[in-house]
Image: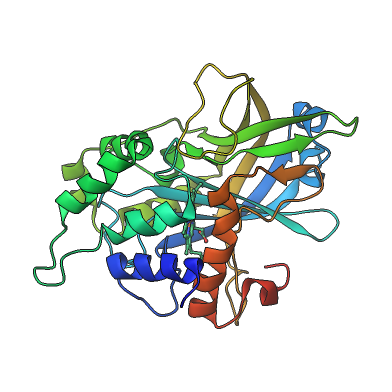
Length: 314
Ligand code: HEM
């Protein structure tokens, strides 16, 4: 009997195909590098090393959500933005975020079920919308993410998308204070989308090409915001977005300066893991957040032949 994490990755493969050497999800993407500088407000909220104000190097990856690396950029998809911070003490910490405000499911078991109903019919190769509808009728909590997904327009650029951590994390300050936060990356270039027709005319790889060209012309910046939980906000449930009125603190600026040429070379395995936190930051009890490490471990085993634990600091 395979583990739930293996079942989850198998279910993704059944929808997107198995593509050796590629991530099981978010297979298509582009690696960039730059640095993050925390604002003074950050250190008041967390004692984490990258939030004290000294600039820290980062490797980041923009991606499309599909596990099929051949899916064109103009297909409707969640866009991913994963950032790895290289901390002054030599350790690393990651923020892994999506273009959606909330997630589809609240438990790993439901992730497997929801992914399985998206598997195309083995006979016709076509999607089976009635199965998806059946799941949604039993899981109303998935509707906000589904609506958000369907309402998305193709982005003009990976640099014109707002990305959310969706999960909550506890920030601990130096004086023993603690609060739950959710991260949001806000593009300095502003949010911009294009029509599906325009996206198609730009080609299957337009997002990968555009970000390369944009970086040649100058740095791409994102502001990092943390949104603070109010009493009663769901901190363990990724299907529930918090109200937009939540207090928001700007905690730093990310400046991406070029394509990354150092990682994923010569056998280096790069994994972005939202559970890779550091002193001053703790994961919430959200079951999806905890399950992701196990699922990513399976994906890494399959694409690189090593487990997450064997990738060192990754
Ligand atoms: C049960 C829920 C989920 C499962 C099973 C899942 C599965 C996966 C897998 C297998 C990978 C490839 C990992 C690798 O090989 O390195 C991946 C990558 C990724 N996931 Fe998830 N995921 C889940 C939820 C989420 C959520 C909630 C978010 C956003 C908040 C997210 C954002 C991403 C991103 C951005 C990547 C690409 C990271 C990169 O660029 O390397 N995932 N996911």
